[in-house]
Amino acid sequence: MRRFFVEKIPAEEGSVTIAGSEARHITRVLRMGPGDRFVLLDRRGLRFQVVIRSTEQGVVTVFLERPLPSPPASPVQLFIGQAVLKSGAMDLVIQKTTELGVNTIHPFISQRTVVRPREDKRAKRVKRWQDIAIAASKQSDRSRPPEITAVTTFTELLQRPFPEETLKIILWEEEEGRDLKSTLRSTLDRSKAVLALVGPEGGFAPGEISRAQEAGFRPVSLGPQILRAETAAIALGAVINYESFTPKRKDT
Image (cartoon, rainbow, N blue to C red):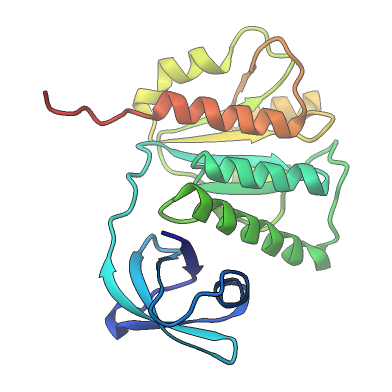
């Protein structure tokens, strides 16, 4: 069943009106009309099976038929700090890390960041990333899309508070003594969250690594290969998702 998104489902009202791009996709692209059913999601993780009541003047009105269970959440929260990349690469990171279950994406500007959005255009860039995350969340059947915070600086991100028992790591291609796999397997069972920082196209400057260590981050390597920044973020998300996932056992 197809899935669509609204900011908030007012469950107590029994019906919801959908406008904007989601309504256009329902009516103009899919040609859906009264009597058709789909799943409606919101940012809080609520989901309902709904039936269309009417489609008038670009607005779709639906009746909430029944609540649906949300997919199980990962036992470990994943926060990724991603240095802002060129447009296509950053879009790919947002899409794929959303599919991999990241909870929050923190875009930041570091010393070697090539793309530095002007402050008056940052909100528009974040809105685009949010739209990409919503589309990826629907495709991957997530309970809710990740939060994408305002663009910040590397220094400000290091100072931002995170939940207690958060494992803080920073990807560094020059790290030789600590790899991501061994770090996760030795600490993940004691961590409620992982905060991972991924650098820009040119990587982190040595001084940034030192400042991150002072803030409690552990430099880790993904392996001997030098990965593109967008590849590193996606590989990181996949590895953490794999290491933290515990499948449900069926009774025998």
